[in-house]
Amino acid sequence: MFKQREWYFTGTSGKQYRFGIHPNSERPPSAPGVFILAYTHPRGHLAGWQANPLLVGHADDLALALENEVPFDDDRAPLWNSTFVLLESAPSARRACVRDLERAAPALA
Picture 1 (cartoon, rainbow, N blue to C red):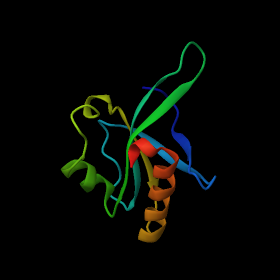
Picture 2 (cartoon, rainbow, N blue to C red):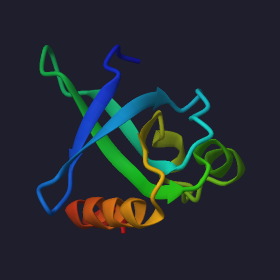
Picture 3 (cartoon, one colour):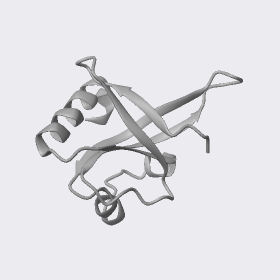
Picture 4 (tube, rainbow, N blue to C red):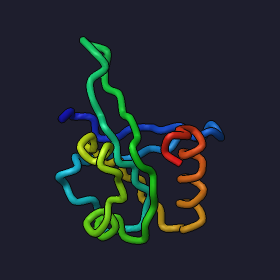
């Protein structure tokens, strides 16, 4: 897709979260963290890239969660082409991150 390896998403709190980027064909790490399933595409000639979040969630094991169940409706599933991963072991920090990011993008909630 593109060579960028990390992406920042900003929550409503103003906090920036640094996510690693994986194509949806690549298995994410077997670790606890936050994930964003997104449609990532070029914005235009030399304008860079844009990430459109489709779903924000968290899990104790990212690989297992995404392997077993991706809770998409039929309209969003074909758009998913990238997975953004933020490793975080503390469940409370994961939940806070997801709430912060969902509030920033109400269509995800």
